[in-house]
Length: 313
Ligand SMILES: Nc1ncnc2c1ncn2[C@@H]1O[C@H](COP(=O)(O)OP(=O)(O)OP(=O)(O)O)[C@@H](O)[C@H]1O
Ligand SMILES: [Mg+2]
Image 1 (tube, rainbow, N blue to C red):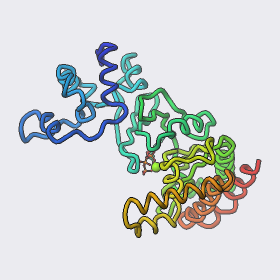
Image 2: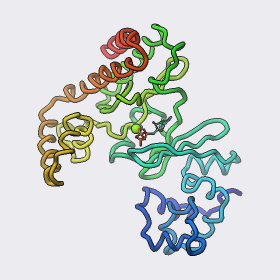
Image 3: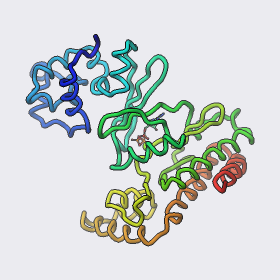
Image 4: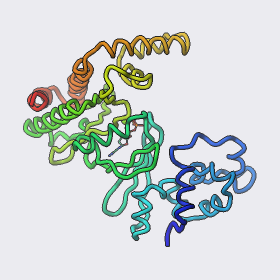
């Protein structure tokens, strides 16, 4: 059998990899080298916590061909169960910046994404968004990570010239408008770029039939505890304000930043939920303008018409 570990061993392995462990100390890195001066095998650092008390298990992992191919990802429920049921080992590629490594695993019949959580409540928000069919469908995972379906399609800013008919653009606008409406009704403020940022990056994936999903709820806020927001939530709110970038450049020290966040927490508490969520509409409008710089001004009217109509229901 592939990945032939007992349930107890699996539990030990999963505790070591989830939530994502910190970087190993230097002496542990050295101990992982096959010989002095040789590089550490890429697949082993995520398991470093086992190298202390569980050396035999650590050595077995190090020689397991599936672990060599997939490292920690072999032990996520969506992967382990499929492999044990006879699926071929998926291909593995990496992307992601802000949150660390985002792994895309492609099986013959489907692809999944495994990524570390970026905020304390992201799993909850992603689950709600997935259930609303706004975000990727969430799958069984391990603590500290999301496991989700890979959304097929291209980012809004990558749509090809031939796809940009008025009716297609209206459909996409309406799909995003409806999705943002459903998020807001569920007390979720997306708080990030939708159509495009100034570099053409987007979080809106569009499939060839015009169906859409938003990805990445890493800095989104769940407003269910309004007016109480913790430091991380206030930080996630302010980091998308142009004002904050200027402030960060000038802030003298950590106390100064903490004071700013405490003051801003007061402002958030004094705002209404709809004042907070209305920033998603501003982002959408600004993002559409930035997308139009690349894709042509004629995209603006059909997308906006679709969006506004769907958002207002
Ligand atoms: N569910 C998904 N379906 C399809 N592609 C995805 C999915 N999740 C992530 N990706 C891809 O991985 C990239 C990074 O994912 P994500 O945005 O969650 O992490 P990040 O660290 O915020 O990265 P970035 O800073 O590039 O936005 C996305 O831009 C997208 O290309
Ligand atoms: Mg992102």
